[in-house]
Length: 190
Length: 251
Image 1 (cartoon, rainbow over the protein chains, first blue to last red):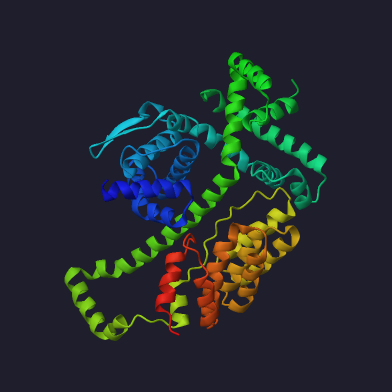
Image 2: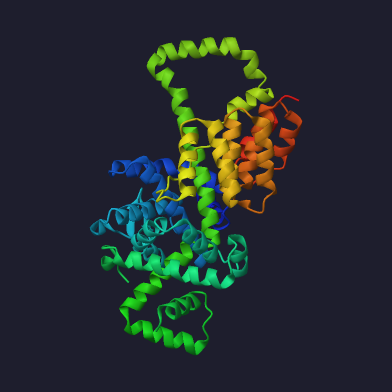
């Protein structure tokens, strides 16, 4: 196996384990190229940084779910994910492509990666409305989804457990309702 | 079905808490109901995005991203004078600098204050302004963010201290410490970083340990600073920098 392939494999393993040194290495080696690509495609540096972060999280989710192995160069894989996330962000569905040839490297995103790309606009929609929730709701939902026990949440927030449960439902309902009322919701694919 | 029950069922389905029959019946319900499928997908996205491991990864990536921004800025600053001078003048300047600083280049040791100057950057403000809506805490937070962002660190440290006293969120504590350090109050900053490090909220432990080490350098306490940096594990986000400091720091 070439040293590049070994390094790419180490990077995937590093993402799977959330290894800070490896993540630093990936940022130093890959992020500048992505920033440059997004700037060439009408984005600014902050857009590029956000997309790159979401791409690493998408790769992490993929690694966590499946016994994933790279079949192309890491750079090509990262670039096709970033391209797709960027197109999804700009709602430019016509340009969505899950296979590509990058520097003579054939890249193909499998079904679970494609699902993640297609769910990206839902993710952005949810994040938009989550940010708009009152602080107390964001706090309760964040703790709940981080799997903190209801009794602990109640203790931290100085509330009763029953009240926390009720608030959690109300907050989630508000979040879902706001998303459903957003004009973009109807356009989302199932 | 009542909404509360429906949400509960969706959560149970996502967390694989339904028994075989309940799961089969829910899946057949979903097959016939597009809206329900859409709802499930949305819940799955929320569950995944707010899960503890994804949040932890996101925090790490934000830290790394901030680090790369700071390095980019430093490199741009370093490069710009040479660009203005032009290549030939730049070579001549480099030769002159080389002759003047040759002894230092051969012996890269740094005093604690030189190491501090080399590695310290005020922590960038990563909190967002909130809409106040008459909310006292949001108002106070907005004032604190504005003070910190505009370099009024003394005011910022007091405001973040008040915010922490009000709701106990460690986020405010770490910004209080950063504001103190930026205001050259290293000794007080060290105490506050210690409070963060002793808290159960591990989100800021790496950040607090890095800045505590720098604050110790700033106050001239080289021995303690070295101890702090020596304790960094290889997965610490500032491990490489800490190793460089340890290598080059004077005894």
